[in-house]
Length: 42
Image 1 (cartoon, one colour):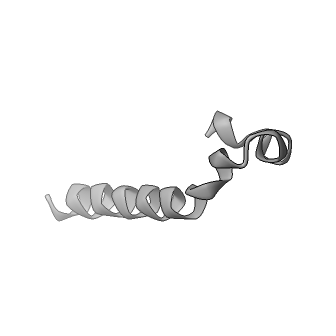
Image 2 (cartoon, rainbow, N blue to C red; image 1 turned 60 degrees about the horizontal axis):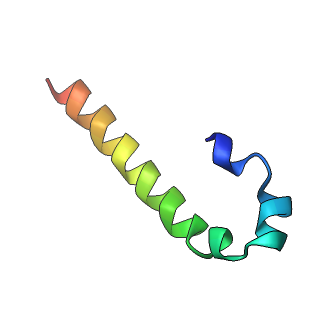
């Protein structure tokens, strides 16, 4: 999560970092939900 602290600064300097932010966030959410469901399914 620490890499998102300076999004505006590094985003302006290196737009590459911002390109896949939404996709990455969605993937992270999906993984967390999967782990949570797997844990509660036991």
